[in-house]
Length: 209
Image (cartoon, rainbow, N blue to C red; front, side):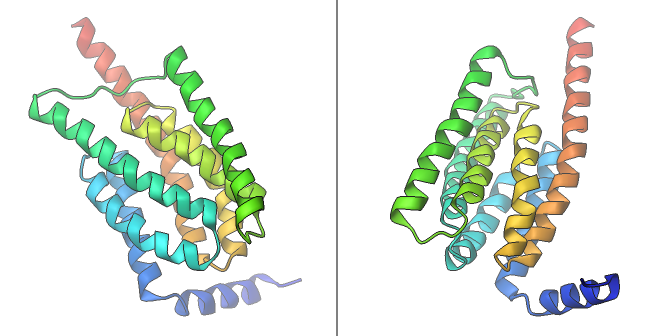
């Protein structure tokens, strides 16, 4: 079993061997989540660049469900950007809110239905060696991205359910920097949840004044 020094040296060597493309993808991913935490619309253009870069890397690593997830992220990024921009043009701010019952059902339908669809595709039409984990990470993140576009506080919960599984999965597939990025995203998502809950409370206070 490796001691801490050996583990750190291995991590250091792996980071040095990381491609510039992966560094750029991670950089834009960090930028996106920090902008999301600040409730800033610029999260979408930053995210689109990072998505396109990571898509190529995930296909190379045979993470096919996560590649589909990246494509879904791409579509939802344009969808979210359009919604936020439309509201801004009308001098309206799409409020931060909790899910209602209908949105709760849709989010879970996306997560559960997406899992079974992805798992079926992975085991029947790809050479994926991690279909269960790959499908789970992607389907829960699908739901999180839909909730983010609608500014629902629970998006952070769905993303972190996905992140906690994605961290070891990405490490296992040799994408160490993406694994560390996901760990960072996991931590940021905790604070994002707290920040958005605070924003919601401030909105409620303003409405009562």
